[in-house]
Image 1 (cartoon, rainbow, N blue to C red):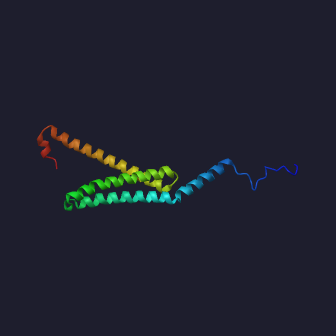
Image 2 (cartoon, rainbow, N blue to C red; image 1 turned 90 degrees about the vertical axis):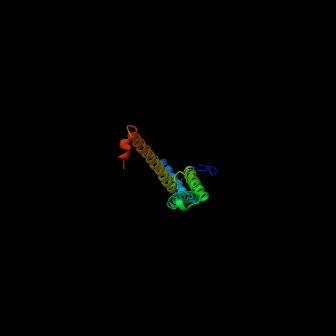
Image 3 (spheres, rainbow, N blue to C red; image 1 turned 120 degrees about the vertical axis):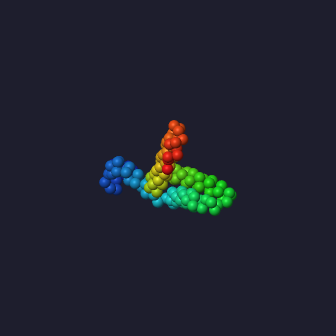
Length: 146
């Protein structure tokens, strides 16, 4: 080698296999997603919307006869909007920060809640159809229910 030539093969340490380097980059991205202030804010806002909607459902059910008509409309529309906004915020968080554990757990909770809600509605439809079906043969069996 001459004076003007540089050795480009000089490394500062041992060579790192490519799969280890890729794993390190993946872990760094996961760390960044889990410690992002924006992701935490999105997930926290989503959780607050979800909790408020569920509390309004519970409180409005307990005090339904005390509520006036204006409040009844408020307690019917607001929880739905809060739930939808909570779901949307969680989806935004999981799309922008796919390795965030907080966002993943929220999405799993929300999907589980929706599946359970669907199963309960299905059970209600089956129970109603069974009750109506028992009355179709004659009204005597309807009087024997309950």
